[in-house]
Length: 581
Image (cartoon, one colour):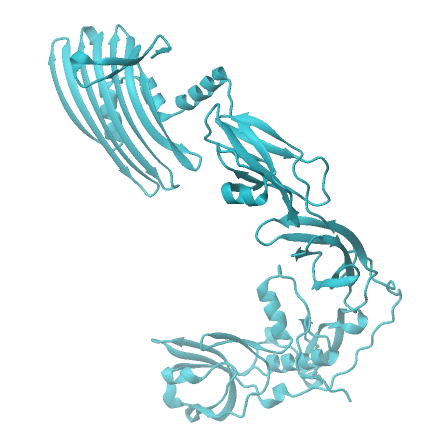
């Protein structure tokens, strides 16, 4: 005699699989249903949960009754066939003996079969038991849909109840609640099926006839290949990765780390890598053994690696940038693990030594990397850096690196000029005065702005003051602009025009950026030739910060000191592209 549990769920699944298909496979392995009661999800295994203790009477009805006495011809079935996972055939998919009811086959006149795939079942007897339950539940499908008042709230899926509707000839018929829906206005809607205790009875299964092996499998599991150790992260917790490659089907790998023959770490890994941490400086051996579905083990893969503190940088290359220096530390030889460098600075103050105690107590740590760039420096100044090598297993001594920030004057002027010319302040001054007042008014009205216009005209002489206000607010942008145009002209078609433009703009955007600008332009247009002077200020995004710019444009520029116009003292001048102090 064979004794086994009625239901067991045995198997594996990938995390990438569809969760619904996994749940369906688990439910099929126990003829179960998903439940949700009192805020908790659950799984109700298939069984007879009777006898019934609750009675549904006609006084509870709150709607129509729908009765389906027989299953439809399209859904009728008299034979169940299917597959399960057979441990004795290397955990491969195998057919279980079909389950059939001869009387139903005779009644239907032909075998009507349905397939079951039991991926989480490893017993042919459990598979036949589940097939018998499915066959009976499908065939004996007397179903009733009823709507009850709120008293039906207590009936939940899986419960057995007695249905007593004498007016339609149903007297104390035991039925199983298979579905439950609740609504304050519609009451409780129940689906009841006549599933008696016989539906859940056991079935005497037949052992399957396993085909003989025509080709014996190979005698062992392949050894893991290409073992290697690499550093993954350097921080408060140092971690590295031990990785390898498996050949063939493997369930898991046994990983053992030894030091001087003594085991210091052991772990089972389902994949092809594991993280190691906290190993002190020493020599270690890694041993990886692959295990297949039947528990067979491979020869061990072997790796020996030495963990040593890294040497200090042999020298540091310094590259000059735009008010910046970039440091590139170098090592005499390549170490056997990944390395980075730890960058500290004391600014323009040279420390009394390079010991870890002095540097860590008097300098500031800038960061860790293979190179480091320091920005916003002053040309001609020397900055002191202290750099050491660091890896997962230790740090080297510090080396001192004086870094002089130096730039060619001509190249520096070009870089500064390029940066200023790209600013809003420069572009606004560069555009000069705008004397097309008619176009300005049309553009403002198109953008839903407001215009205040005052003017006087006498023949070919005209004077205008135009104030334009524009405000924009959308989900992506807020914009405010106030512009004033003061203009006088004389002659045919304004052949001589004098103008002053003042413009203030503020802008914010939903992407987190903002900008603001102020522009004052003055100009004279004579016979189509424009003479312009201007002053502009702007602040706009620059990387993760903001940069402000002030621009003056004039033929001659002077700064004077004093508060009495009669006693002003000249400070410096800019004239003809030269500065005089």
